[in-house]
Length: 167
Ligand SMILES: [Zn+2]
Image (spheres, rainbow, N blue to C red):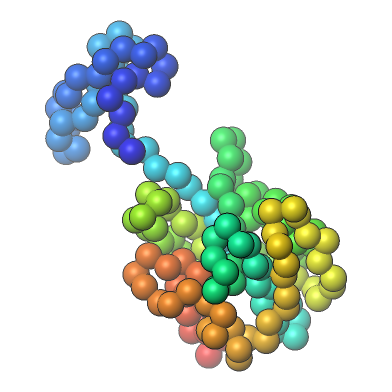
């Protein structure tokens, strides 16, 4: 998202050269550049000791495909803290371990997705109201339920990283 007005004082921004970044919106009052902003989210492939993956059905996202746990990183939080928190909130289970899988740019929503593989011990979920249902799906059946592979698809990307590391 490109700023036209200063988010701090409401002043109309002007374009000012900012070194290698070229012309960047600038507030004369606050003497501050406002670089384009975007959302930052975590997405976690939660896998248990039986190689089953937690897949969520969330009607507002898709009726056809299932989702990994995901959510926005909040102000003041690290991506790792957000990952542990989102799994706890959405599934009601605690992760034993967290492993980074990379980042993906989700262009349609202007989101930077931070991917993780989260290890958990198999137990029943205690679901958030945001989640319609969730299941432990065997790894071998996972791709049948996933969104098709594409460059910005952090779900598929994280799955691929898991499979490569497993070998
Ligand atoms: Zn300002």
